Image (cartoon, rainbow, N blue to C red; front, side, top):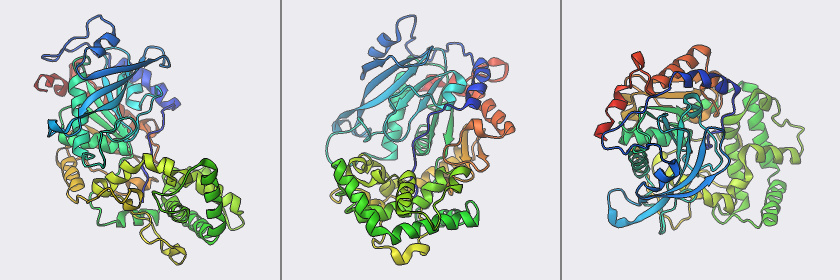
Length: 463
């Protein structure tokens, strides 16, 4: 089973070096959209306060020069199809530089990041950035039990409302982006509201079009890296399970010292086994050549094995404090998103908890879960047939993308970073692919032939 981690903060020297040149080519004139309120010369904080349903929670004094950093709350419908269902406040963050610069719409797919990080498209375009916290994560919590309104369509409608509202202040080009689960959310937004933005940059986003067939993930994990390295990880898994008693006792002692427990998963023993099974996937998802060289061998001590497991599988994730924060993630997996499987034949004789990594085991039993087998095939068909102005960046070593998106619309492409892991970006592409990606991003941001605004931006009056 895969874990979709948050997009790492971009500090790449290559990204920074290329950003200045690309930003210089995208000095956009202010473009008015029909019916849009112009920001004028007033203070952006006052303009934000004037937007209906928006609350300016805080302006933080931690932004980079040229930016202002705001934490915002937006009143959203719990159910976009039923106003009677009430509302909730969704957490947003805004990095504002100028109203006539492009806007980058981003999400992690989870909790909002409250530090003033900038996504790669934001850096490359010298753009404003609006981050949307995913509904049911962090502070963006509808009232009431359960997750009946945690669907990809409701989240896409959240983004649609954000775009329509903030376009009053930022009438220029809009680019959406996200990595991993955030990238998936960006794709789903485009599926249901394809004209909201001018282009989409997606990093490391899985495409589970058929949750009934996990063979793509099993094949990937049986071929990634070299055979000796794959066998080294599997041997480490066996050693950890053979030393289960000692390692589980240590795990329980850690949880007790933290005041934590394993009520959601069920027991420390089951949580430990889940971590051991998942480490195969999570290691290859993030490993570098240096990490591969440091896989524990047959002589490794129990201390070394425990530390390695914690480093790669994150043992704290399965104790209640952290597990509770990610219940909505597992709910989404078990109802719409789906996930892949991991090889277990090499440890089958040592397992105690059948189907331990199933999403159902991470969601309290009083919360109903029914899987929708039509949700992901619908997304896949749209991307293949109509997914235009979409750029997907993937790493060839990343098991998360054993099933990946195949855009078939105009001006879309998939670019690969050889031996790249789950943290790939445009800066890591080959020079030719990097130039192609940056050219597309610049064009989507409004610099068409002769410096004219893109047709997509020019059609905003219809929104």
